[in-house]
Length: 409
Ligand SMILES: Cc1ncc(COP(=O)(O)O)c(C=O)c1O
Image (cartoon, rainbow, N blue to C red; front, top):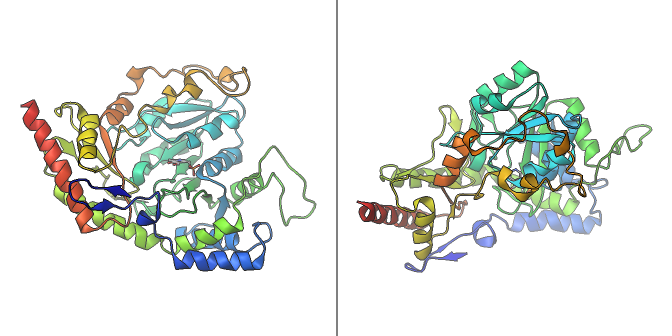
């Protein structure tokens, strides 16, 4: 919990019970698993139940649970089965867990720029980075705000490559009435501690494609097709299974997801109403026909504010309001793994297979990325925020921004 120094009010945190919706229901399903004595999902029933419920909620044929959001992305890439050196076009603003799996499968992550309003890739930005070597496009719905999927799907269809949705941050977000994760060929979710619903660590892959679903399921099981006749270890793969204890928490959490998202939407709307007229900042832009599901509440701080998002974040911290200026701080391609090509021993593989301008990360190619990261101020968000919490945030942001503008005038 963060204590608000000036008002003695605490903001609930998604890192502990104060900002999580965990309780009796999770304890009951956990007790069921413990009593059964079966903790592996290869023999138990709770992970299977989570998969059935998740698929039903999303209206898809298949949901496959796994150990993390990173494992979900890895399984999705493995199911595409890229030839080494082929390219996966993805976003420059994301978690490393969404990028490392591409390299592990021998493919080259090719970074598309983002829309400076949202931090999301667009049809235009991915198209610019597609080549004849592109084998997949990843659309990451940042902070719960859906990408404009139609234009991205159109690029994928034109090139004949699948679109993978990274919905780790966007449970129940909607684009044109379709749920995030169900719009492309494969959708990936994370159940990590701070997500809309959580099992501490965990992931889920969804798809309507039977062959891809089989590949994902076999991949997370060391390539062993449980339940099929004449099983064998079919290809290179890992144990990325979710266990029954995790599945038990997941079943109880999933039943709460709709309520969690509703509350987050209502409180985000209340903050937007309070901040939309404040000069010097911009509230989140959401595309027509889309519904945000508010993993976080990202503000954009104008250049007119001296010190920008970093200065506003520091002034908010002094008032006991936490925020993350610049989100991941720098574009993913500026991290050491990419800059120094630190992969397997000293081989630099698979970067050594890259062709053309796949590894050209010149700043001039990424105006949206640098613009967005320079301006974004991410406010933590969760379903336990009350009117009082929103009120404190709104007042603090308004005061801090007005003071900064006065100082600059
Ligand atoms: C967009 C995105 N993709 C993938 C991941 C990786 O998920 P995990 O941390 O569960 O491995 C995250 C984690 O925060 C994420 O935000």
